[in-house]
Image 1 (cartoon, rainbow, N blue to C red):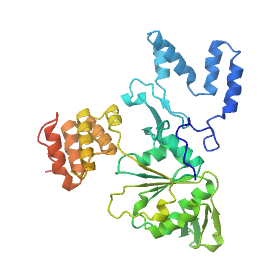
Image 2: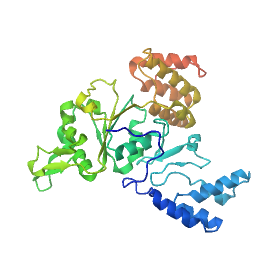
Image 3: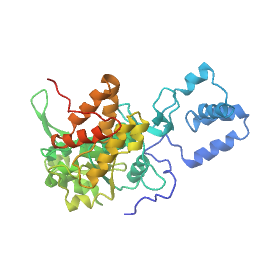
Length: 364
């Protein structure tokens, strides 16, 4: 199965992302605009590119070094994300990171995309991989954005299974449950639903699921694209339709992780997901904390430390610092680390620009 061509531009519109107009439609509309007056061209361009007129007008005013009047400032500050398309944030009150493109997760949080390859960002790669049935395995420490990236790419279409050592076959394909009348009825699981509805499914912490349990997904992930529901013969064979897509995410260093060769071979794309420390700084995390975390991460890779703060911990530090102060946030960060790593983190922070004696947060 061929890998995506990372040298090409963003993928063409397709049925999975209907808000992106086919190129032929766009060309026809552009030709239609050529004979219109300038302001009509700008206004009509919104039908092709949401908020285009606002962005064009904003750019023009900036070029003339003119101040926007209060009404335009209010209109431009509504910049953001529409229908899955990444748009540069324009609100003056937003974090500096809004200068970058972002996507919005189902919970409303912004996800700022990262590079994957030479020309595509991570969200684009996931979407193109779905179009070409190339399943990705995302691996890396917890808190680096594996789940957030997947949610940003697929939004409300996404089914998610959080894997544990106790995950059973029924958690994937479904099982019998008792209804209000006391009868037992079959209820499909998320894997079956995703296959029949043509939806993506994230197997989060896939490495913690028993390989024997995961074997039920093999038929859906290879050329057969089908699943025989042996637990319910009347259910028959489930056929995956276009759009069905499996994403795996795992922390390979977590205790109990097992990934069989049979499963690994069905994931075409393998990528390590790491923390973008520069983005953490742009999103308002104290630059000294970011620098210390980055240095600790490098020492983890060299085998000198066992743990370093990742993106999730850094954003939590930012929010805790805003609510309770910097020292409180530092001690909370130390307390959030594994117990064996806390002395090293305290020592690292004590040597930097924030030099002081820090202890894990305690209630005495």
